[in-house]
Amino acid sequence: MRQTKNVTDIELNKVYNENCLETLKKMKDGSVNAVITSPPYNMNLRIRNGKYCSRQIVKELSTKYSNFDDNLPIDEYYELHLNILKELLRVSDMVFYNIQIVTGSKRAIFKIIGNLSDYLKDIVIWDKGHGQPAMAERVMNRRTELILIFDKNNAISRQFDKCNFNRGTLDDLWLIKRGQKVSSEHGAVFPEQLVYTILNNFTNEGDIIYDPFMGTGSTAVVSKKLKRNYIGSEISNEYMKVINERLSAVSETLF
Ligand SMILES: C[S@@+](CC[C@H](N)C(=O)[O-])C[C@H]1O[C@@H](n2cnc3c(N)ncnc32)[C@H](O)[C@@H]1O
Image (cartoon, rainbow, N blue to C red; front, top):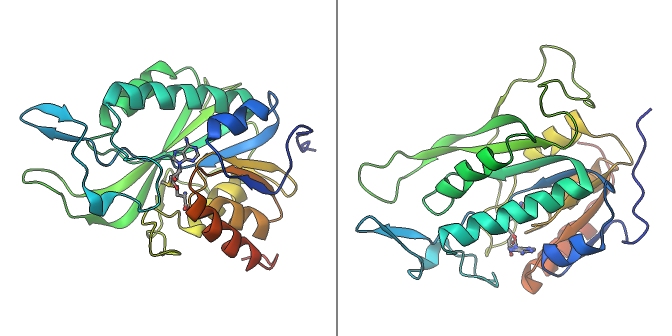
């Protein structure tokens, strides 16, 4: 029987309106069962004349209420996410890190995969059904995102210590349509089906799920529906309102 984790220093079923690094400081080692998250993709870092130019902001790709411009220099983006991932692996055995390869994330993701290869268990390809038209000539449309699955204890094996699927029943390519807009200001929302697929296959009722980049609250909403406990962090005050509205509308019924 799988044990539900114990987080005595931090309230469960709450989203903290702060930088996730602050929330993580309050969390004990091994205190949550799984992390499910999608960090900012550094959408506004561009390349001009063969060089990164971090100051050009493509406003239509910015989330209006973000407290950041989503255009960190590539090395800073890499260091930030490497550090956050190390912290996530301190508090959780399993981390599902959804990331899209765009210009501003590409080199950082490849370096993270190399640096954390001892903890990288597998990669799921999320196929959104159709590609987003490329922003420039001679660039492929991006139709997929990655879900990097990190396992703190047993990444050498592809066999999951804890899962609810039978042999031969879960593929590594997930065809799930893009998330529906739940707020006019946030374009990068998880489809509930994506969170459902992870929770259903890799967690159990009563488990504690942490999302350090809660956005509009999809991880918390589906966790509540499926009777998992959630903890979240979200830096934007405005998104907190969306999260609270969505959570209060959830009746605890299964899909
Ligand atoms: C890609 S969105 C997440 C979307 C989310 N999966 C959903 O379904 O709505 C990333 C979110 O992380 C938040 N964010 C960025 N940096 C953060 C940080 N250091 N700590 C906490 N939240 C942060 C942004 O405000 C944004 O809402």
